[in-house]
Length: 145
Image (cartoon, rainbow, N blue to C red):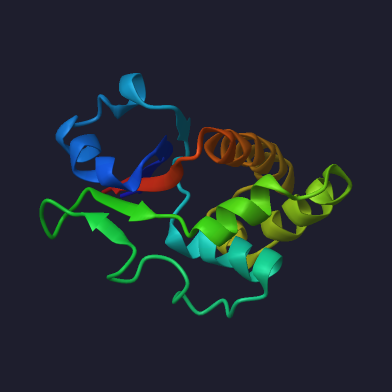
């Protein structure tokens, strides 16, 4: 069973409303469809960009979960603003290097992502983070089993 996930540009106060939309968030908020992206992969990226330990503690703890209607999800998780900012402000000259490093991480290898696919996704993620910053909104990870 795979994880469905989307990165949504919204205010964190909209988390419950996003879950109540039952999948219609794709039509109501700006979404980067992100199947397979989870807190572990984002934590790996945070380790690369921010130097935080890659031990799963940076994203997804109880303080990061904004809405969870049941134990089985779906979950709305706040992507830490410092990670969104680091991605949004990454100089263009470093994008390929970071994307390649992220794509070569164990998390992507285990899910059989090629470095090229990870690089392409990272470009989309960077544009999404830039939009969130421009609009003064948060980046929320919606995950469903």
